[in-house]
Length: 205
Image (cartoon, one colour):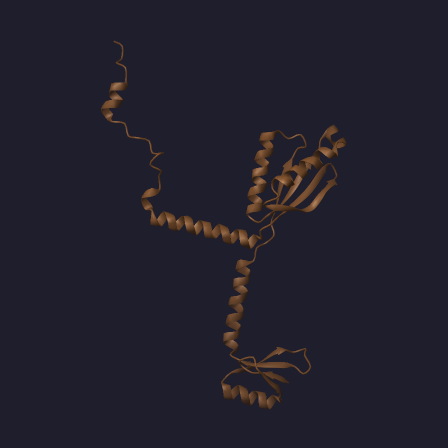
């Protein structure tokens, strides 16, 4: 077998008996790390510590792993400006979160003979959010609908990390300034009881 020392140094090709002797001498375990290699590769290590560190790394990787999420936003080709701004706001929020967004233009009746309306609308939306996302899948017809997919410039993990940092910053600020939970300018002034009473008109007899 090819033996690797506890610090990663190459010991060389040694018989099994010699490897076991060295493992006992170092008070370590002899662990096979590459069974398919020729000759097989073994390493002197603390196997318990190795398993623990491997488990911690796997746990951290799962914690930081972000599943790909695709949000969907549906629009009509003749959408009015207010609705467009509302829908665009949702797309902006999704992209900031690091999510992909599937934009679906729904055609009805005679609108199906005007696919250029949907294409222009998708182009307009892509240009409006180009600072946050890019066109991952170009507009294409899908039955009665036209579909485009936008991808975020930021990765999901980056967006999550920024959101956590912002949340922690808000918590720290609130903790440092507990008395500033309400803006004094927004606080409604208290009205004296006498003033309230005098402002009322006397009831007619």
